[in-house]
Length: 379
Image (cartoon, rainbow, N blue to C red):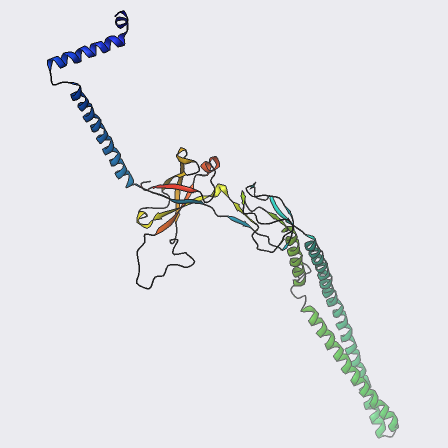
């Protein structure tokens, strides 16, 4: 009894028991069964109120959001392909390795490409010398034309002089002052001078034609912009670019995936050697039912959960766009039912969702991962 007096809890309990005993004495119907029933009714009332609240929130809230678990992480992959053919001399990366833009991925054997550069350089210098020859020939042919013009003038003067001499001898021959043989010799000299004049004229025309043909190669050009030199320069530049392309570099930051190339393998231009996944630019393709998309607009807020991290981490994003057609519409063999046996199937339309880049850096995702996606229509 001493302990109960000193213990406040025991004393309070004794007081409660005394009050209950007093109430039971005063009201014989008030017993433990009635009390248990009252507690049961109270608990049921609390449960109904909570259920009503949750139901109201679910019904009202669902009108302002749509959800699907038919969503997957996607990305615009970068395919690494060689621009030149060659044997693989070295590989610098492995699958799952992270690379930065400009990092060396694959090195091709460049011996043949170096020979191509040397050959193109030789053609370039040959073209320069050949074009210099065109300009030098133009000057030389100009001098030849001047010489031919002078020769033509001289031949014309000689013919005129010989014709005068022949005319004088003809007058003398009428007076029998000279012999017929001398007159014949003078006539031959006229014929020879006439022929010489014709030859000089032909040589002048030939020199002019040669100069015209040579000038057709250099008209409206200089040594720097001549077409033959430019063509040789382009070939040299192409050869140098091909040599540079024997070293294959990463086009962007990302993770190496599906590496299929091996050392010693001869690869062709355009063959896929590996893929690079840009982890910082992944997005979600969420396939919503067509009946859900009435109020979906670009820019609306989205919350996402990845199966990889579970409910502990929520991603924030926004609607970036809605696909132009369903998956069935873009299938290799689209459904074309013309028999009349048609059954309507609710279609799904992909919605592109961009994720906060800061969250992607903190919790990286991989393409193909499953996502639970909720679009908040009121935002």
